[in-house]
Length: 267
Image 1 (cartoon, rainbow, N blue to C red):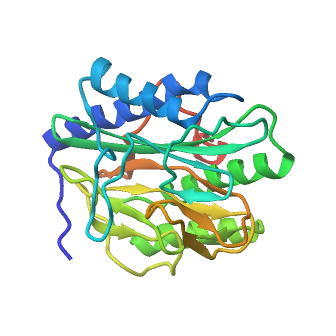
Image 2: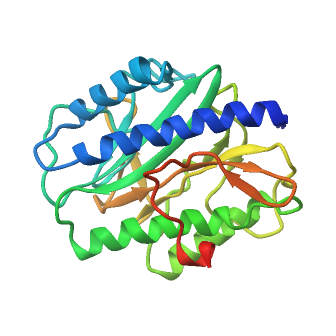
């Protein structure tokens, strides 16, 4: 496995790309409401990335081996959709939950982040899933420091999610990121502490747990991209891009409108 370590100059480029990606989510936030379609959100995001930020939406026409090109500029995964949902004309309804996943390329660097949104008034169960998934992501982030191992991140996320009655999607994971959208290492959201690659300064990767209210099994829809829960239970995901620093970690995908970290981080 070849992990590309980033320099201080690389880090500055990644900070800019990460902040821009988060600012797209800030811009979209007031538009996520009943009656608005994910197609409309996609157009807003595309125009902002291209015409305001001078960037490129990484998902548009992205085609890893075995996939058809992804047709939109963001991913929008609604309710029981786990990830890679394709924006469409269906209006969002009161009570829906939606993950919006944004990756901006700026000066060759990729910033990748996603947030959950509850449309209108969500159920207690939907809000609980979204909130616990957010905390689970931060449980993983809190493990990042030189000398720790990737297994420590996955273990922290898995233990927290399963202790609260949720399940972890295992077929998709976080990933290294930089000049390429997806690099090594793979960052599993489950596992055993003290296993897998050791973290060293200069590593950059995403932590993006997909957590289901029901069982962990998933299936792919006929569009070749959208992943859903087999039991049609709700699924949530949050994502940040992280850099390993000399003393711990830096979250690269933060902006003015980013949700605040949980109390166990700030306290």
